[in-house]
Length: 612
Image (cartoon, rainbow, N blue to C red):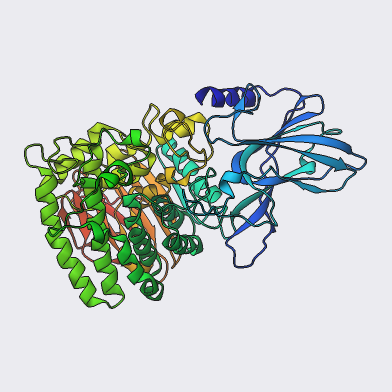
């Protein structure tokens, strides 16, 4: 894979023949077939056209997108052309035999005079088929669009005359309400900025079907993929139509892994916290009770696994090679972590929809099960969780999920977080979402940022440096040979950076009260914009000679603020005036919420007040 992308880099650095570097042009809406459908086609012009041989042109659109092309020939043009669509390059040409599920398709078209025509790749039976015994139905795109495929490059052979920018357009499918300025992020680490750009664009490009799908190989929603997509979608766009339609689809077409079912509870809770829409939640609340693994729980509240579930259904991580040597048993730590997190959220949502008896039942159930969970799986000698009852092995996964889900007692959080911080990225891009959440929330933000930008082939830095423009399904081709190169469950930093580095999260449903708790690690500044239903939260945090933060909240929102404690700081200033605050566990915690536009600083009573 690296060789393929290195060839691409060489191609771009050593253009030959009629090489034209074209300025990026704004995308124009092309058309939409249904006013209620959240995605439409957009016209995009190439960023570069290169003549690579007689009557043969290579067209580069700069980034991969799902779509097809429209050709507008010159008057008097005639003849058959061969059109190649691809995601990968090799030896200066589109790779005709790319690895895994990396996309390549070829088709032919006939040019007749100056008649415009849409040229689309041939249909792929795998991702347009109906339901089968193996999996639910693929999500189909509008037939009026024609076939769409993820591609960056088009190679055209036999084109009459010169192919110019005016002659070719990519019709790319993006959310119709997408605005690149809805969400922004910049910090003092340029690699982290590039990771943000990659992950943000990945969310934009992979929502082409109007429902979250698992990439191009199957075009099927899966619960875990969809939840991770949902978190990043909320962090990059104001719309919530696609998460809702995905949730309803998955309630009808659930998939097989054990831990994927509780993700439906996570999705419902995330939607409720974003919108505060009790009516939406109440209509779906009872159906969520089928997603908490209740049929597998013993009298102690521990989920049991049969031989079939041990060998197939209990997934822990995917692909299987990413499980850090996890040892499966009849009582599985990861599966039980998901069960506990799900019933905790069910208690919260039950109360929200007026089902107080349910809420009390779930709360009591969680309390008993939590004690039993710790007794069953925690090793007091190592201060870590084991993979299962009677199993000595303590994998990364047996510890990252309990930490992320708030199951680890306060006395053990430091030991668990320290182990995770030092073990490295011994998990997939999916489990990395939860690994990094646990690290950010437990005093290991430096380790979390370092893992995102680490060298080697198990980080988002590797994706950036390999030249991809959409996140991959796995860290590298060698870890999942059939992987997609257009998989948004690999885009976790799109939500992690605003939620943790900027520190902006909702505290109550509907965002009427936010939490602002920035985790800068070694960064000297971080700034950005976070979309919410009430409007944008704008943050600008600096840690130079002093710690300062500018915050702009939308109307109708207040925020609870916590600031990382700094050496010699003795007070907190809001708009230049001292305010009530306490120090606890390395944080300055403001006593009163803020609203509107404020400037906050940590200062010493013996030094001049900082300048913003």
